[in-house]
Image 1 (cartoon, rainbow, N blue to C red):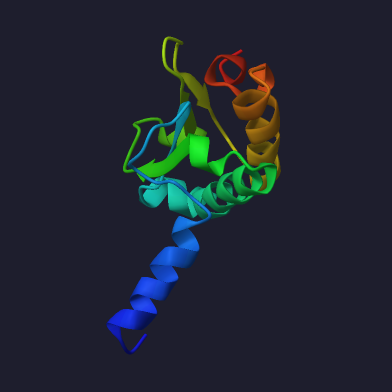
Image 2 (cartoon, rainbow, N blue to C red):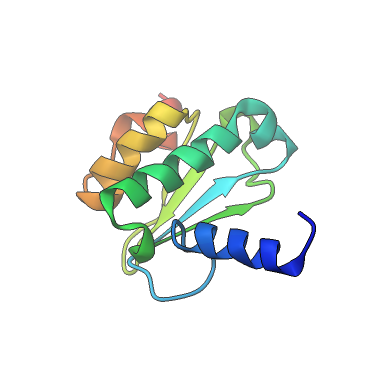
Length: 123
Protein backbone atom coordinates (compact mmCIF):
# COMPACT_ATOMS: atom_id res chain seq x y z
CA UNK A 1 0.00 0.00 0.00
CA UNK A 2 1.56 3.21 -1.14
CA UNK A 3 -1.14 5.84 -0.84
CA UNK A 4 -4.17 6.95 1.13
CA UNK A 5 -6.30 6.30 -1.97
CA UNK A 6 -5.25 2.61 -1.93
CA UNK A 7 -6.18 2.37 1.75
CA UNK A 8 -9.58 3.96 1.10
CA UNK A 9 -10.22 1.53 -1.79
CA UNK A 10 -9.41 -1.43 0.47
CA UNK A 11 -11.66 -0.05 3.20
CA UNK A 12 -14.56 0.34 0.76
CA UNK A 13 -14.19 -3.18 -0.65
CA UNK A 14 -14.04 -4.73 2.83
CA UNK A 15 -16.80 -2.48 4.14
CA UNK A 16 -19.13 -3.86 1.48
CA UNK A 17 -18.56 -7.39 2.85
CA UNK A 18 -18.69 -6.99 6.59
CA UNK A 19 -20.17 -4.81 9.29
CA UNK A 20 -17.76 -4.59 12.17
CA UNK A 21 -18.62 -2.41 15.15
CA UNK A 22 -21.18 0.11 14.03
CA UNK A 23 -24.65 0.22 12.59
CA UNK A 24 -27.91 -1.43 13.47
CA UNK A 25 -27.76 -5.18 13.69
CA UNK A 26 -29.99 -8.13 14.50
CA UNK A 27 -27.07 -10.03 15.99
CA UNK A 28 -23.51 -9.57 17.22
CA UNK A 29 -20.93 -12.33 16.82
CA UNK A 30 -17.64 -12.18 18.72
CA UNK A 31 -14.65 -14.40 17.93
CA UNK A 32 -11.94 -14.80 20.58
CA UNK A 33 -8.71 -13.71 18.91
CA UNK A 34 -6.21 -13.72 21.77
CA UNK A 35 -2.99 -15.68 21.28
CA UNK A 36 -4.67 -18.91 22.39
CA UNK A 37 -7.56 -18.44 19.97
CA UNK A 38 -5.32 -17.59 17.04
CA UNK A 39 -3.09 -20.58 17.78
CA UNK A 40 -6.16 -22.85 17.89
CA UNK A 41 -7.43 -21.62 14.50
CA UNK A 42 -9.68 -18.64 15.20
CA UNK A 43 -8.66 -16.69 12.07
CA UNK A 44 -10.22 -19.21 9.63
CA UNK A 45 -13.31 -19.31 11.86
CA UNK A 46 -13.67 -15.52 11.72
CA UNK A 47 -13.15 -15.51 7.95
CA UNK A 48 -15.66 -18.33 7.41
CA UNK A 49 -18.32 -16.50 9.44
CA UNK A 50 -17.81 -13.29 7.49
CA UNK A 51 -17.80 -15.06 4.13
CA UNK A 52 -20.90 -17.16 4.87
CA UNK A 53 -22.89 -14.19 6.17
CA UNK A 54 -21.92 -12.17 3.10
CA UNK A 55 -22.81 -15.06 0.76
CA UNK A 56 -26.24 -15.39 2.38
CA UNK A 57 -26.77 -11.64 2.01
CA UNK A 58 -27.20 -10.94 5.73
CA UNK A 59 -23.76 -9.52 6.49
CA UNK A 60 -25.25 -6.05 6.89
CA UNK A 61 -27.57 -7.28 9.68
CA UNK A 62 -24.85 -9.02 11.72
CA UNK A 63 -21.93 -7.36 13.47
CA UNK A 64 -18.91 -9.66 13.39
CA UNK A 65 -16.07 -8.59 15.61
CA UNK A 66 -13.17 -9.98 17.56
CA UNK A 67 -12.02 -9.71 21.13
CA UNK A 68 -9.08 -10.76 23.25
CA UNK A 69 -9.12 -13.54 25.80
CA UNK A 70 -12.56 -14.89 26.68
CA UNK A 71 -11.05 -16.90 29.53
CA UNK A 72 -11.72 -20.47 28.45
CA UNK A 73 -8.54 -21.26 26.55
CA UNK A 74 -9.06 -25.03 26.61
CA UNK A 75 -12.18 -24.53 24.45
CA UNK A 76 -10.65 -22.31 21.74
CA UNK A 77 -11.57 -21.24 19.14
CA UNK A 78 -14.57 -19.65 20.86
CA UNK A 79 -17.45 -17.82 19.17
CA UNK A 80 -20.14 -15.97 21.12
CA UNK A 81 -23.48 -15.03 19.57
CA UNK A 82 -25.47 -12.18 21.13
CA UNK A 83 -29.05 -11.51 20.05
CA UNK A 84 -31.23 -8.78 21.60
CA UNK A 85 -33.49 -10.18 24.29
CA UNK A 86 -31.91 -13.62 24.23
CA UNK A 87 -29.26 -15.42 26.27
CA UNK A 88 -25.73 -15.35 24.87
CA UNK A 89 -24.70 -18.58 23.15
CA UNK A 90 -21.07 -19.70 23.43
CA UNK A 91 -19.75 -22.02 20.75
CA UNK A 92 -16.48 -23.83 21.46
CA UNK A 93 -13.80 -25.81 19.64
CA UNK A 94 -14.93 -24.19 16.41
CA UNK A 95 -13.66 -24.84 12.91
CA UNK A 96 -14.43 -23.03 9.66
CA UNK A 97 -16.96 -25.75 8.77
CA UNK A 98 -18.69 -25.46 12.14
CA UNK A 99 -18.73 -21.67 11.79
CA UNK A 100 -20.49 -21.92 8.44
CA UNK A 101 -23.11 -24.22 9.96
CA UNK A 102 -23.65 -21.80 12.88
CA UNK A 103 -24.04 -18.93 10.41
CA UNK A 104 -26.76 -20.78 8.51
CA UNK A 105 -28.61 -22.61 11.27
CA UNK A 106 -28.30 -20.21 14.19
CA UNK A 107 -27.70 -16.73 12.85
CA UNK A 108 -29.91 -16.98 9.77
CA UNK A 109 -32.50 -19.59 10.79
CA UNK A 110 -32.59 -19.04 14.57
CA UNK A 111 -31.82 -22.62 15.66
CA UNK A 112 -28.93 -23.02 18.13
CA UNK A 113 -26.44 -25.71 17.08
CA UNK A 114 -26.45 -27.31 20.52
CA UNK A 115 -23.69 -29.86 19.92
CA UNK A 116 -21.13 -27.05 19.40
CA UNK A 117 -22.01 -25.12 22.58
CA UNK A 118 -20.01 -24.99 25.76
CA UNK A 119 -22.71 -26.95 27.62
CA UNK A 120 -22.37 -29.86 25.21
CA UNK A 121 -18.56 -29.84 25.56
CA UNK A 122 -18.72 -30.14 29.34
CA UNK A 123 -20.73 -33.40 29.31
